[in-house]
Image 1: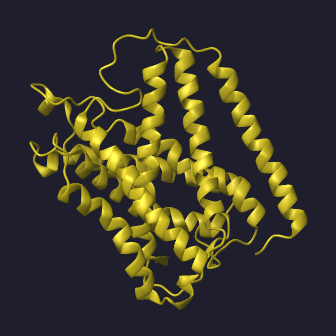
Image 2: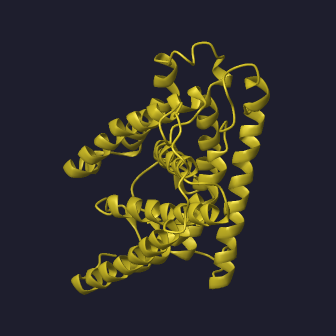
Length: 306
């Protein structure tokens, strides 16, 4: 349902209040922090010590510029109006494939010495692939139930979710989590450890989670085939609901190979593919429980007829 001008004004005021509150909390908690003493730096602030991880995060951000530009063009030109199921697949598949092809075609110097399974980008792709699959296959139905969301375009579907979105989510989440990694690491590089830094880090993760969810909803609002019964609720409460994904995934994904170093101890500190998969599955279960707690609180029947 489209929003009337009055509803748009109400939404603007509500979102302004929400973001102002988050900004005030972050600003106030930031004032309590103690900055680390500046010493000789061995890396840029916010960059990973693990060179494979640093390279992986950098290429994730560069590849995001490619597919985001493509999405902007598609939305602006409404090219999707002429697409059928295979048209959507033809667009979304290359967006996901960027992350599983380009890093291996153009590996960094530090990665050429590593087997493919030991490279950070391999484990990042595996983690995000598992988590985004769970999100589409299961979590989407919470949006169908709680927010009365619908995908109305013609598409090949798995569990009533367009298959093309499983692929597009991979691209989105690789970008989001590369950004969140930098933000979390920047906090740890800049401020002395302690309870106040922990609180600030949690507050930043919460703000990033809500902002990510709202930003995605806002940027795809021009796409007419993803609809909500109540768009005001979708933007305000729906962003918090979607943000639950990232409250869990941002800190858990950040741990992936964060303590690994190239060198004598590298093989004992890096994550295996098995550990990576277990972490992603655990994050998926944690998010599902949180979403279901919200559903139960709201009194929404998950198994009733649509």
